[in-house]
Length: 251
Length: 262
Image (cartoon, rainbow over all chains, first blue to last red):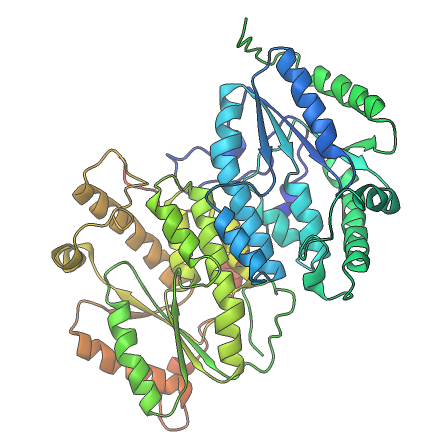
């Protein structure tokens, strides 16, 4: 059962071929999108947000219309996620579903319309985050992939690969304590937040590794200097911008 | 052991669920909640513990869905998944615990309404089936079927036109009367299709409420207390047993009725 067998599509295509039942509704999989979609992935402390923000500034300076969308940021779903986390109501299944709902709202309002308009859309975390985290929580991998079948396939997905200990070293000191769900404390692996964080992020790391060949993620060695990583990212992004619209907003 | 429609959620044990899961389905205004109000005290009087549940009643997502609907900028995929969140929260936190405790669960709508609504909004039927493949197969589905001509006065003369019941998110160009007719007719067609696929027990919802209730009581007794009610074997058969539904669930290239041209 499921449609995940058809996930493996080449670059530049839309993610999964959702076929709507109603002919008047345009299928997500068949939009003609002039925009470009770049996403960054990696465990906490991999430095992906830093890299995305540097890319953002560079693209803007070059005159592209750039839109940024962050994981778990839909104004429509925010209260529900917050309630679920605060009251610890979330199970692996509902954790997965609130995040998918959040992602759906951002796809429908912040990602797809801008791709149609020809913008460069940058996402800090994308479906791969859900695939990794939900699998680490015991959800069925095919079910979660089907759940996100409406997602737009990115132009390029950068995976910032970093050893677990390096990431943890960057995080301790930079933040105060580990959050309940972020550390996977809901799984009851261990009572100690830091141990749980380590175990849970280790599982997520394994899932990411499996996704590199599955989805053709572009791996960036996140132990390199920031500048070297950014140069690599920019080179790859530039190659995808050949026929992209330049907005020259301030021309 | 209970069955799901294909996939199992982590931590959801399917053994030791002695309760009964009874679904009342139907389009808006078919009289589902009236029947549940009549059935619940009757079952309790017979000594059964009853849980009644329905759409948007989850602790997690109920308020969120109501707020999102007020804002009228709820996208179709988002709406579909928000309802799925609400359903799964109730499945895990209400329905399964109640079945485990031996309750009779009376649910006002189930995955079928959610599938019908999503499908008429253009969602891929195989996608929506995949999401709800984790749902439990119920013991019975009573589909309160009512034609559009009878439905119209019943809904409109009592509570007026509702934006969502008129599918105004789907037919924004029409006035609310035309929207109601188009939307409900489309939903009805989808329900009829689901009724066949999932072998719903069809109940004529245009009949008198007490008549319908008497009929439902008889049917429900056969489920909860088959020993006391002699009944022909065929009516006791699990509608899902022969896994026709499974086969259809797995069939990803189904043809669908299309919306009337706008």
